[in-house]
Image (cartoon, rainbow, N blue to C red; front, side, top):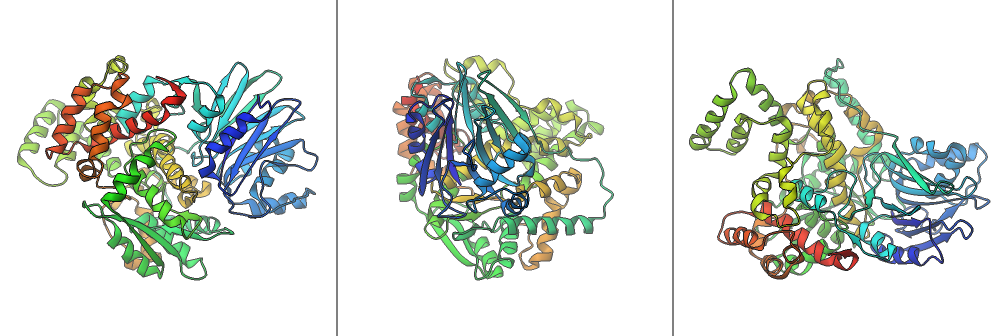
Length: 622
C-alpha cells in the first residue's frame, strides 16, 4: 500500500519530491524517485511496508533498468505469479508484488493487467519503447488522478498532491460542485478541478513519448446480470461460500499484523468468521460507537466477535473528539465526500492502527449481492402502472402519507408518486437536496438548475434484461462503488497509514455474483446468498438486523460538537464568500436544524464541502 506519482517532465525531480512529501500519510515507511534523464520521465512512490518489509523499495526496475514500475495497492496472487515468472527464466530480487509488474510487462506488455488479482494503481515506464503505462484495478479500490497539458502527463494517487506537484493553480469545476451536492459524491471520472481526471476503474492509459499524447481504454467492466439462472439455490450458496472463503484467505497474506473491521452486520460478520477460521490465534476485530445518537453498533459487533472468538476492540467517539478531530479529517480529504460513514471509518482506522497495519472489511457486498433496500423498492415502483393509473397513484400517495404511519410510509409514497426510474433514483439518493437547489445555489451554480440531475451511465439502464434491480445494481457498481464507497475506504484508512482490503471485490467472486439474476439477490430482504452462507458458517449470527454500516449521529453532532464549525462556515467560509451558495438560504436551514428539525442531509454535505474548499484554496483559482 503506497502513494504513487509521476510526470513526463520530471526535470531535476523537484515535482516528484513535492508530490511524495504530500503523500507521507500513504507511505510513512519509505520513499523513492526515479528520473530517466534522457527522456525526462519520472516516477515516485511512498511506501507502507506490508510484504517483504526490508526488500520492497520503490520505484523498482528489471535487471537491465529498461523497465521501471511503482505500485499502490496489493497484488493478491503475486506468489503464484512469481512462481510462473521464475519458471519462465526471470530473476526476482525480492518477494514484493511490485517486482511482478516489471517482469509481466516484459512478457505481455499492457496485457499484463489480465493476470492481476488485487487492488492496484500502477505506473510502468518502458524506456525502450518510450511508453508510460498507467493502470487501475477493476472496481477502483485504489485512486489515480492525472492531467495532460501541452504534451505532458502528470499523475498522483490524490488530487491535492497532484496540484502541489504542478506548481501552479487550476480552476475549480462548477459542474462537480452541482453533482456532489445532488449525489453526495462526484460520479464519473472527473474531479473538482478542471483538466484533472481520474483514470476510470478497470482502465489503462498509455502515454507515447513520440506523439506526446495518451490513449485510454477499459480492459474490464462488471458484467450485466442475466434474466434467469437455472442453477439450484443450494449450489449457488455453496459456490458463494467457496469463492468468498478463497478471497478472504488471499487477503490475509501479510508480513505485518492484520485485523477486521466489524460492524456486526451480515457482511463484516461473514468476513470475520471466515478470517477467524483461516487464522492461527485470535482474530483482532475493531468497531466504533458514540456517546450520543441511535446508530451505535457496538453491541451487535460485540456479539459477533464473541461468537468467532475474536479479540475485540471498541472505540467510543466522544463529543470532544468530534469537535477537535472531525474538521481535520475532512480537510485531509482529496475530494469532498458527503458519506457520513467516512468520519467513523477514519476514526476507527486511526484507533486500529495502534495494533494492526492491515484491516479487512465488507465493502462491495451490497452492490454485488443486492443489499440496498432501494433495489427492491425501485422494482415495486415499476409495477405500479400495471394496476393503477399514474393520476390515481399520485392521489393515493398523498392519502397514504396522511393516514398511514410506520417506517415505510415515505417509501410507499415514493413508489406511488409518478416518476421515471432515473428520477426516482435521484430522488431517493439525493433526498431533500434536489428540492433546495434553487434557493441555495449562488451565482456560480445557478446555470445548472436548468439541467435535470442524472448519474453518468444512466442512459443504458433500460437494457438490463428488463430488470430494474439489475439496472441499478450495475449503475452502483460502476458509479457509487468507486466514487463513494471505495473512495471513503481508501482516504479514511490511508490518512491513518492503514491498508484496507475488500474480499467481496475479488474478480472471480464478482463475476460469479453478476452471473446470478438480481431478482434472486434481493429476495428475503436482500443479500440472499450471503445470508445463506452466514447460516452455514455461523448460524448463531444469522439475523435480520437493519443495515447501519458505521453511520454517525450527524444531526446531533451538528447541533453539538460541530455547531461552531457549522456557524463558522456560514459566517466566513469560502463556499459563501466566493458565490457558490447563498448565505441567507443556508442560514435558514441552519436555524431550522438548531431548532430541532433535522436538516443534516443538506447541512452535512455543505460542511464537508466548505471545510474542504477552505483547505485547498491556495492551490486553485478562487
